[in-house]
Amino acid sequence: MAFAQAGRPVDEVIAALTEKRANDVKWGDGRTFGMVYDGGPSVHEVAEQAARLYLHENALNTQAFPSLAAIQREVVGWTGNLLNDHHLPDGQASGFLTSGGTESILCGVLAARERAAAERGIIEPEIVLAESAHAAFHKAAHNFGLTIRTAPVRDDWTADVDAMAAMVGPNTALVVGSAPQYPQGVQDDIPAIAALAESVGANCHVDACMGGFVLPFAERLGRQIEPWDFRVPGVTTISADIHKLGYAPKGVSVILHRSKKSRKYQTFIFGDWLGGFYASPNMQGTRSGLPMACAWAVMSHLGIDGYVELTRQTLINADRMRVGIMAIEELRVLGDGQFHLVAMAAEEGCDLDVFALGDALLERGWYHDRQQPPDNLHSTVSNTNTGVIDDYLTDLAECVDAVQGRTTVDRSTTYATLE
Image (cartoon, rainbow, N blue to C red):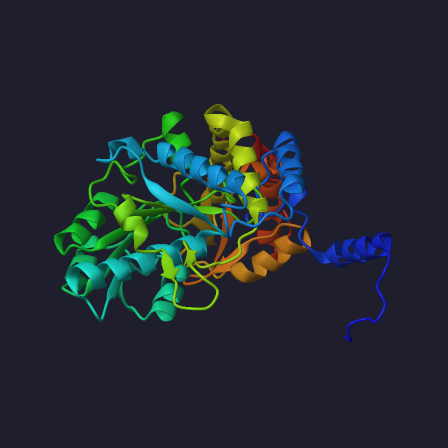
């Protein structure tokens, strides 16, 4: 694997890259449940044109690139508007763009640690969260020296707030809730979790990386959404990923703070070196302007109406998928998910090997993430999967039969009548 002495022509380089992609998932055909989210041809076009404009720009210094400062300010402002920041005392949330949900969560944890140290003198900070909370919180605790207190989930897979309450104490810097959580797609009781945080003066972070660009539009479509955003007193920070169901290319997310005072705790400022004043608002120093510009372009192109329609189709896809899964006697859906996340496991008492089922589906081109316990296949459903759900359900039933060693039965009548 030695680095070549001589360079290669452009055409040859691109041909080699194209060949490397041969075994990657073909997300464009709708058979991948997650990873990449397809907003349609016009979304592709506007993102690709924005990417070309901002391929080389660097957001490290927005004095050099004031357009990126404006882009960040506007995208953060639009996202805050979706998350009802007009209910805040200042009438507007503050925040930054990040490279993705993990970085947004890292920033939220860092801000909580710094605030706890500055305002409460805490030197051994703790995070209280449910076992369903994203792994990025554990990564943040490992990196930043916090102790995790993990509570169980209830039978419905939501955070056990009573168990969390028993863990909150004088060293609590952060209490975490999810809207919705990733593994089963259910929403935690955010008002109760925020109240726990307030009771000891801690931050409350709502992980809406999956829901930030779904729940606001689902609510506009008439879905019953329990309170979770800045309408809830005590919510300090919220993470929301534009590169998921916001349909922007990777990688761009938003970290929102309840106030500028809260936001300052995540910003690193340093001047005691020969390179002059240095300030970094998040984990990165140099930041590519490309994903920031793409997010601005996609959000501008879609507007609220565009997102409502994409969310409408996403929820249709996910609802139909849930009903189809539950029509197969060997399978169950974990949790009473109402949104776009679907976790599928073997029915209790059934000896179906779910991961073998995943292998069989993968042979037919269907890609799922895998989780445990219990063994289950996870799907992040989106507009990407429009038009293929019925094909998926047919293949799913046939794969169940194959894994169980049965002759495939004709279930077309069953699926034709699904509502």
